[in-house]
Amino acid sequence: MSEFKISGFADEISPEFSKQIEGFKKLGIKNIEPRNIDGINVSSLTAEKAKEVAAILKENDMGVSSIGSPIGKQKITEDFGPHYELFLNTLDVADILGTKRIRMFSFYLPEGEEAVYKKEIFRRMRELLDAAEKRGITLCHENEHGIYGDSPEKCLEIMKEFDGKMRSVFDPCNFVLDGFESYPKAFNMLNEYIEYMHIKDGDADNCICPAGMGIGGIPEILKELKASGRGDMMLTIEPHLQVFSGLDKLSVNHEDLKRKYAYNSSFEAFTAAYEALKACM
Image (cartoon, rainbow, N blue to C red; front, side, top):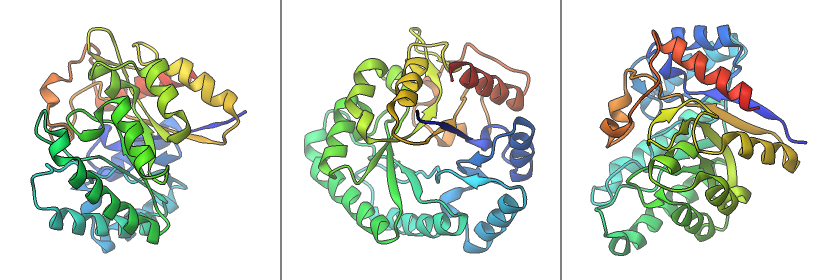
């Protein structure tokens, strides 16, 4: 039997790192996937700031499950040079924070022009992967709206292109919102490549909801993973149940992230997402 470990995007509780830590300690969550810290994206942290963050995490007995980077959230028509430099800094941040995983994406491209840019997308991803492998860090691709790897088929193509060296961050909700079947279709296609999961759900009305309240198949997926014997699996809570500081930077189409579930505070929203995950488990 496999076991689950819980992590989360603590910036959905607060932009302030001290309050992120405070919130996770209240909930008993021992891991974090840093994304925005005190108003700074994790990939842009200086070495000095990253060391400060690492010291605070150690003091609070917390680990970093993965770097929630924006790498690959770039238009394929834009200059890759500065983005690659940002990635090299992200590798340094990962080393300082003590994690061997970085979440990334497969570039935004003009609609209907996949064939035109496919070669360049894979070239850039190969360059990122080569640099990460030299540092002993695993790149984990997340399915996301508007990027090359938005569908189960495209995600599988990416996994095969890089011989499984690039892994999958499986996000059921993102598949649902893009009109794809998360379970069983997408899960069965990508199962062997899944490194960890982002936990949020989507319903038939294309609305984000807590885990198990939508059609993402989260309870069924967790049941299969638990029975698989494949080892521990990290589950990163990403509620998106209430607008929070920085959401406009996370999605090019954030206006279509409808919400039926409203909460009095970000902490209350995160708590609801955590309790829903525990119920699914």
